[in-house]
Image 1 (cartoon, rainbow, N blue to C red):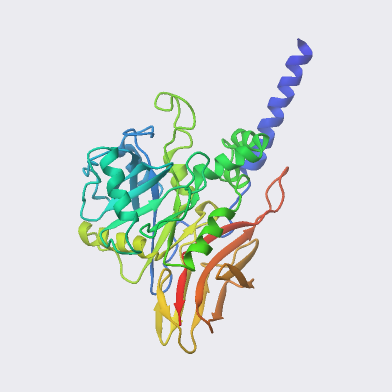
Image 2 (image 1 turned 180 degrees about the horizontal axis):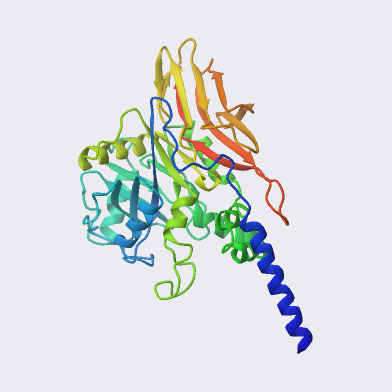
Length: 403
């Protein structure tokens, strides 16, 4: 018994010593700042999607989630409670500097779809009516529905995978889904996932980063679909703060605030938000609809100041734009600052990497039509027992260059 107690004490002391060690480890690849400037001539607004309250699978009421989002310095938040009909719009307004959308997530075949209507059109009074409405939207031509947004969630999540061709009426799909990433990590290595859970109290960001794997299937789907038609990809927190059973009574884990700090969608706008709810809601909706944003793992560092545009005849085109090929056209990419770790800017054309640049600014000439996008990868040194690993910090939505 004494030996057993001694062994347990040794392991416990070792655990806490290692915890103090990794607690000092900074995972950010750029210097931390309280505030960071917008990109030149553009405004960067960040927000999260696929967020659940206690109306469905979440562990807290909407008011608590909104407070958490404000603490995480978000600019917008989209609620997507599951299979809630006649979605309440009480919270759809400005809350301080946070603009809140009341959307919904609905079961459809074996998958789930996020639906949002700009004019607050009802999805239906029950699941049957909702599925009829969604089927009609999905059967339309790309971009036909100007007032609604329909997004496929976690297209390759076990048990919820989409089967068959992606419908033309779908606006986009989730390229990154935090819950799916963790589930995938669990399937690949339960020991590694348990270790991340153990070190979470000491360094939550490191805990998640060491589990991160590139969403290769989703990227392949993006590259395939984007050569056929316009498509938009999104980052989703799928925040519910309910990993631990009885979260309402015990502990919300991971907390909403922490989930909101890990990853977000960064909209780039040529004009500022004004504080007018109706006008700003339309601006953000249109930016999401048109793909004028990038997805960032904010846990690696604040990306605000990043910009990727196509420059053509003294005119800048945002991500998601369809641009006709012209002389002296180029793709310009600027990072907010030079990362302190190894990094590369990847230019991808029609699914193939055509350039890798190791400078914080680059101008890539565009001489032929195609679908272009950008990934920014970094290679931080993780503390023992891990090592260096390549992680994508930023994913842009595609640019569509036509003949």
